[in-house]
Image (cartoon, rainbow, N blue to C red; front, side):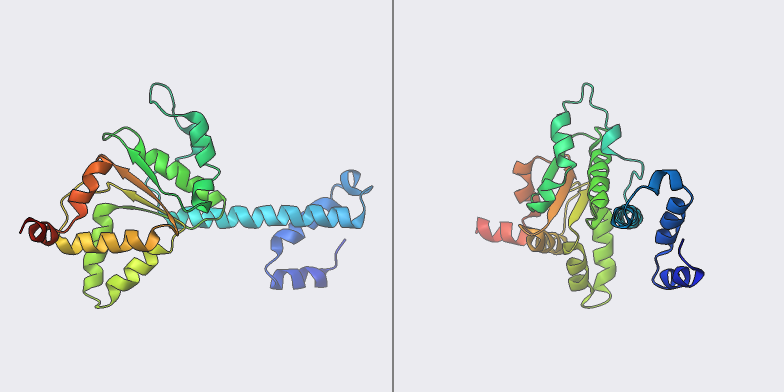
Length: 223
């Protein structure tokens, strides 16, 4: 049994969970008496690591601001939706994030795009990736607010380009001004091939270029 002084030192180091784990071992002698010291230590450290990661994952989920906080890949409904269960399970491993690949979830309103995106985002948080969910209208509103602060737009682009996974909901659902299109293109360019993005949209990919291309550029091309 560890002494009170050792417990005090562990608390100062922020290792309260380790104290609980060791006391649990001491209170269950029948399970641990026959184990060598290094085996008990390894088990204690494994438990501590899991608890710390679980706590961090919960913080990441909260910071991600998911629209559906209860979304989970284990509760995705597959019947008559044309979803490939094996593909969803594979995506939940987050290999696409490790390879800096982006995803497009395309479908009509109410088809479950946002729920699936949040479920995949939560799976990424469990693997300790920094994730952010945001609707396009809300992102553009943040841009308008950042304009008041002078260099704020650059800071905003940097902030959203640094998330390991960015979930952009309602992607290209409304017409963009030239300035808004420039902002979005700059953000996507900074994330391209270095981070992953999930686009939730009703727009066909073939239509993205005409929506994002600033009208001034379109006018020049017609002259």
